[in-house]
Length: 131
Image (cartoon, rainbow, N blue to C red; front, side, top):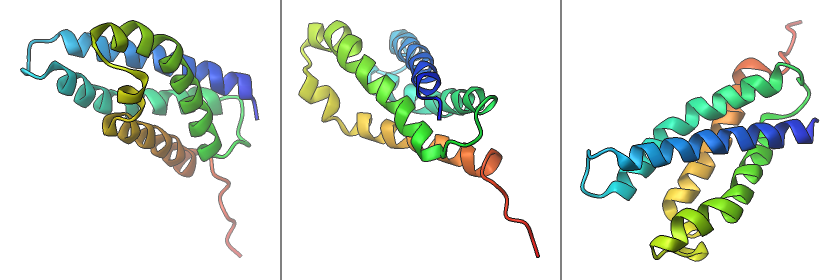
């Protein structure tokens, strides 16, 4: 397992995800812009994680998809705690508890892991040989 590689790809996914969240938030589509941005992020996360898994597995084939998903998620959560919450949530009246206790957060986290696991099952998992 290449832990640094997985964390770096998680960092890249986080950058693109936060950028997408911020851009979608600014679109005047719905009255509730926070809901709008979360729905947009939920739609953007699968291709971002899929791309991240593809980049990771170009060089490493032995890591289980669940481990990769958890490591990439760990990088994203750490950056959320260090950057997103203090810079984008707290100034607008939110808190760490409101961010990390939100159902939106946990649904996207589960989606994150499931996409990585699905990529592994479809593209990496060792195939059983028939007898």
